[in-house]
Length: 253
Ligand SMILES: Nc1ncnc2c1ncn2[C@@H]1O[C@H](COP(=O)(O)OP(=O)(O)O)[C@@H](O)[C@H]1O
Ligand SMILES: [Mg+2]
Image (cartoon, rainbow, N blue to C red; front, side, top):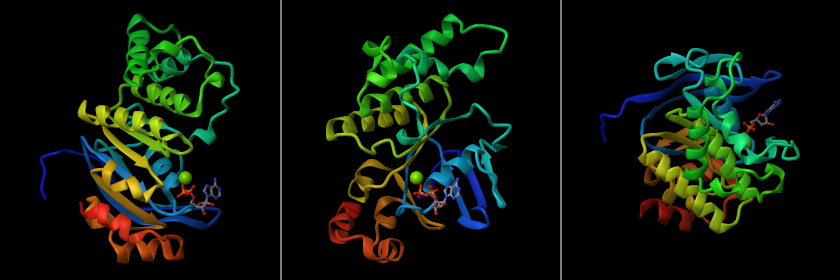
């Protein structure tokens, strides 16, 4: 299938290690705009490392990452990041509104305060995730799913066209999962490209346009019907997957 969509993320031969132990080996992938991309693979496969390498948070041993044709350094502000919920200190005393406004800080020079346009972008982002009524609440008082949505608002407020999210569905109930998926889909329909680490194979085909299957190396990249293939999944998940037939059926649907 060919599309006219521009490539927004181009990863070539990406190799990343921690203390000489490789977490990613020779990963190459081109991600086109206006899509919802899922990153799947077992625990410890390097999914979070992939996201961090695209953001420029970890330095590759080898390989390159280009964002809109530029290095991560030069493309600062063009990619927004929603970290895994476990990586955030939720006791930090800050309101929902302030978290959303944090998304604007890269755009606000150090010698000025946020302007009306910054408050407006933060408020619009809270509306987009349907958390505007909670603007004055402390972040620590919210449920896990609400916190997740506020962090999505922070990323949306930044105004970047590329969003990277690390397991946004982890530990939320079914209704919240729907609400988060709805935000992702609306963001995509407004012209954003979203790369989402996802651990639940049973929903991967339904949620994403394309999947990246990694376990240190990239095993596959393509539509769910191509990637959710029994041979590939059994290679990557080994004995850890019991419900192959169910997932594969969904992949073909
Ligand atoms: N900061 C770190 N220091 C050392 N090892 C790490 C670090 N972060 C991740 N790793 C290791 O790198 C591998 C990939 O981790 P990660 O990218 O978090 O995988 P995933 O997100 O798929 O679970 C794992 O073996 C993990 O233990
Ligand atoms: Mg991870």
